[in-house]
Image 1 (spheres, rainbow, N blue to C red):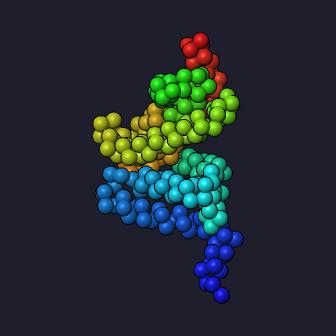
Image 2 (cartoon, rainbow, N blue to C red):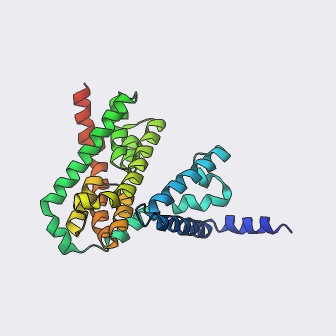
Image 3 (cartoon, one colour):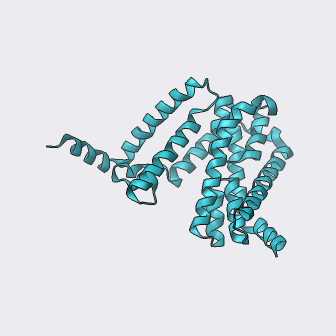
Length: 255
């Protein structure tokens, strides 16, 4: 009896359980690496970078489109990384916020949301134009992707964008997310990131829930629920504005 084949079959039949074990192992390793940087680069940022490499290897090896999940042994990773667990994580994080602190944010928090969405969207549209995607649908989809890697595909699907444009929008959002994770601890003193109010404003400006949460965790874990709260609103508002009002605005400007 081939013991490795038996173990492989057990892991395949219990894919979700194995995916938790695998992600736990990767997280352990990446946080140990993060400790070597004295927390300047958060473990989550390193873990996501490692995940991208593994996804690339999985896609190249199998020729599939699901990254590492294209390999039967790691199929459970696809389920664990799906929308259900993502939404659960966002909602559970938000439960750690104090409503009294959220009320203190007031109008400033709303303004930060609008500024954050508009600034990211405009930068993304300009980049798309100069990258050779001058049509309105592509510009808006990539602009939405710069907002977050969730808003991009939602907008692209609503507007009927091509699959390669949607892929670019997701890639742009992932790059932004990782950048926010890495840079947040480095700029905390510059932007005064010490209070729940400043964390909510920061989350509204940056969006990208995963990037904001990981970056704030490297600054102060107590700030995570506040930044994640406004970052979550950022995603929802982006999904509403990008394929509607912002699309019409770009269409009017581009003729």
